[in-house]
Length: 173
Image (tube, rainbow, N blue to C red; front, side, top):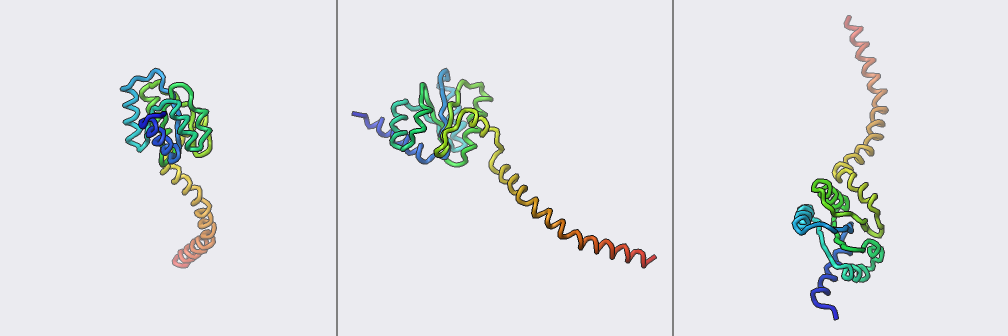
């Protein structure tokens, strides 16, 4: 008979799995409690949760959430990083922490929607620019053809104005 505490842990984990935009599975072998606390605080500042759970409870929560792909990431000492809004931000914060602190935390993979991401794909996500930069780049790409069209349509009028101006200057001489 499972304890009330374990039932609550599974329910919380199931809720996080269902509501997260990205779930990153990590291996925290060889990491001390102080380092995990520092990581947890860095992630919390960005609205991201870090949880260390027993594998049996994680497997039960994955089953209850109807997400069998998650089971592929659960092996050995496993912790999860849950991002709830922008899926790139948790990846960026986690990889920056690992690089800056020299942490032994290893990314195993991630689950984004129904897609299972490899470690290489997670690293690539971390190298992407932030959301405002991506949106401004997209806006620039969308705006370029319109700007070019306006320049082309304006050229005959500009040429006529230049011609009339030169004609006017020649008449004054």
